[in-house]
Length: 136
Image (tube, rainbow, N blue to C red; front, side):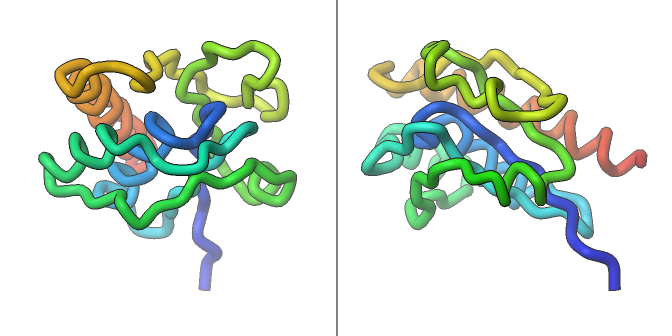
């Protein structure tokens, strides 16, 4: 039996972008792949507007928790996707080998309309990634 490959989605607080990416990847993932998300400074809770925006498109991330990125996560990941860094001191890019950087705006403190736009961009990127992984 082949081991599942892991895609690691990271951002500083692991409360919005990376959680949405994990949710979408779980929905669209090709066989043999799983998603994990984490951050360098995990928040105490997931952004409630991110949870709401995802629920609107049928993806429930309410049960997900913010997690700190670990060396084990980095080693176990086949691909690492950095969602974008607004905080250079805590940026997960400092810890990853050969990450993909999507440069997506942080939804923290944004109105629901903006969170929906960010959600849609993340979904588009996740679908592109899945298509790329499917072709390998």
